[in-house]
Image (cartoon, one colour):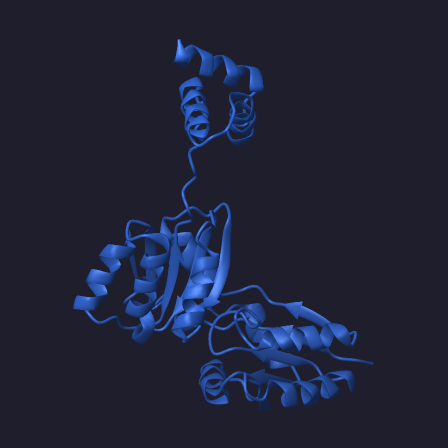
Length: 278
């Protein structure tokens, strides 16, 4: 009989955030797959749990994923943990979950700490609709292309960023979205020095250029504002007809093209052009 894969969220800063269910799952699992066994061992020692650990991270996931799968298919239960927060979210655990589904293994997620939701909830930005973009590329060209794709995104956007890359990322964001775009910078979440700075991209650049940032950041960026739809007037139509006629079009063709461009009835455009001439 096949075992199961449990996704066990771990504290993102405050060890008190581990739940009873998460603790019990770690205690009862046959083995634990960890992003960094040294980090996970500290947590297990804090919880008083002794358990077999296997490393599973970005650079060994293809090899170790198959080993973990084989053990689960043989009947063992595996608890997957990341260094902090919920596994499989911007994390190599995503691939292990997919592998398990492809092989008929049941995957169960334990609710718990997640930096994305924690930051969004205290950001002061709109929470009704949002998208998670994870870590941006370290390559400037790829990072700019990613941000350019989001230029017209109206949902609140959430990013992870390391302190040493923060200012460069903010500068690229300001170039893509404008310095006035609102942003909340959430730092050291659930820890003693938790901080939320709600400001604009331009002001954030100035702040962190002068005061080098410390700690891991979650950036919660406001979406693009709604574009105001402008309704063309008869004066707009008449002006456009005149421009086209000056460029050599007949009145009939100018009216036809203007009606198409401005999405107005041809008779309205025609009357507007005649009224201007009169």
